[in-house]
Image (cartoon, rainbow, N blue to C red):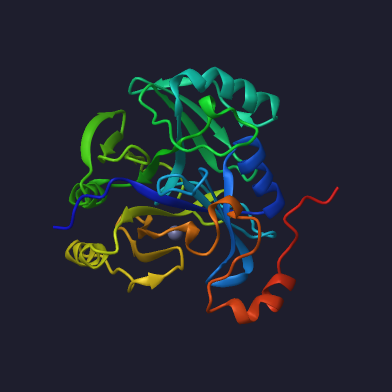
Length: 310
Ligand code: ZN
């Protein structure tokens, strides 16, 4: 078996207005835009990557913001909630911040001993802040959120499933262990310090998930170039049909639709977002993989502005 997976690499979701998406994740949540590119499978649409200062694995939330996207349905067969990790002492700051920014936020509640703050992004994507005393210091960007309160990266995701069994078996093969469970929620944890939680929510009554704005497209787990091919074999052994290894420029990826319906990706830590931009200048300009560079003029002309029209 290849070495265990430490946790999530990135999560990719579908949005609508790209300028609104950018403003929410950078100005409201204080993440850094670490890469501004296009969806390699549909170059008329941005691919925006947010993260910590360097866009470390375990911190990067990415979006395909389709300006005319219809709202999706959050539901079974999807990652229904994305959880960000903050220091436990930052919860009051965040509740105040989200309320004052007009964010759709719920009161904090306890889950498995942690304080959880549910809220939604402008497209209705369900997000949560999870406060933990053991949140790593991380590498937060300079910005509107003081470093002591900054989002450190992912805590985890919740998957809504009719039957969690085969997803649980796959997570166990990936090195996750069941640590606790309650009320239809089984928690699986990996060894990393970011993005190490996957909650399986058995919820056959949930509406069927439908892709669209405000829904998660896929969850990517962190592998190495050394063991990616082995992980592909593990997926085949679990009866899944993984893609070939696809070069995504900043990482290499294998995708597989799990039995529960959620699309998993296995993305390499290498080479990372600094392979084509200096760390000081990440995200400042549209970057394209070299195989799209000769279409830059056409691609730029087809993209909407990233700043909100006043
Ligand atoms: Zn991905």
